[in-house]
Length: 155
Image 1 (tube, rainbow, N blue to C red):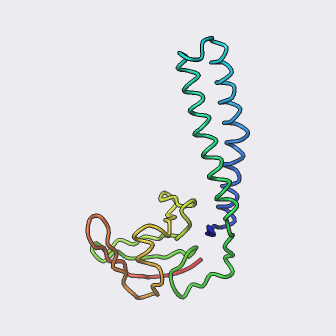
Image 2 (cartoon, rainbow, N blue to C red; image 1 turned 120 degrees about the horizontal axis):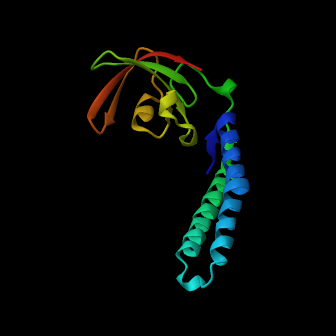
């Protein structure tokens, strides 16, 4: 199954893998070696913890590499702004309080709420997808139903 992401998201994924392989892996290997020097491995909690951390790290690296292999880069020139879709920025007005917000719909790996980037897998993004300017999206969230009026769609 293909995983779609932007060029920026692909770069971040590659950087994360490199960080784990070149910084974290050697750090854990050093911790294992240090713990091994302390003697009896059968009762060495530091050794057990370091080996467990190594297993977790190697699993994470393998998962990220699998994700990288499945990655397909989205080309922004293929994105239309006549309706809300992945990579578009959408300015909305919340009907219950009149507050305006702007969201960019991105892949899960690129989501960052502080930057206004929400994953296309979130309830809000799912509710906004396919809507056009002037339409109202009703979105079921844990607190109930929220209504968002679509004010603007851009890249």
